[in-house]
Amino acid sequence: MHLHFIRHTRPDIARGICYGQSDIPLASSFPEEVEDVRQRLAERLKGRTPSRVYSSPLSRCRRLAAALGYATPLLDERLLELNFGAWELQKFEDITDPRLQLWYDDYLHVAPTGGESFVQQAERVAHFIEELRHEAIQSEDSSVCDVLVFTHGGVLLSAGLWAGWYSLEEAFSHQSPYGAICTLEL
Image (cartoon, rainbow, N blue to C red; front, side):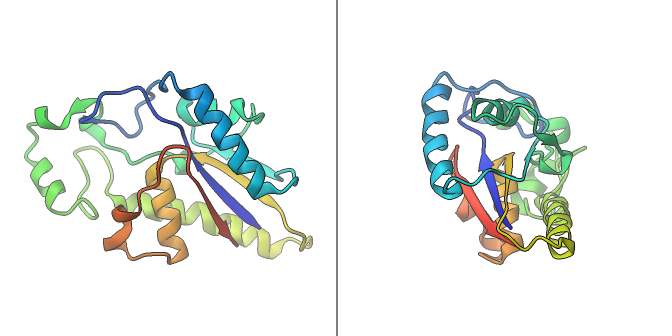
């Protein structure tokens, strides 16, 4: 099974705004970015039709899936971006919460107020991947199948962490650009 994680395209939000699970619009460059993703995804699929398509429930992921011809993906909350809780849609420089410094000091393990840590996000993504891996093992059909997953940067980092491509401490030096495709073989 090839599991293709596809990061949404560029959002339309000012730099320095804390967003994760907030539903925000996409940049006006969306049509051009879609065509770029379409070409790169076609190269990965090599003419094969995906057996299943998943998406984060957020519109920035669902919109990319729909633009690529997958209008009704299976929505899975485990594919959401990091939950920044009370900090969502605030400028980082305007956040007065004392936990902010704790988070800056250890963003891997410390959760924003009312949110989740990166380790918690990585655990939910690992659960999603393990569930699909278990299904692949149980399947009697051993042919190659492709699963598309329209999601967010933190989920791509978590998938790479699950695959052992880097350590937890190195994860954020591997941030994928908008529209990136990360493929795992299960």
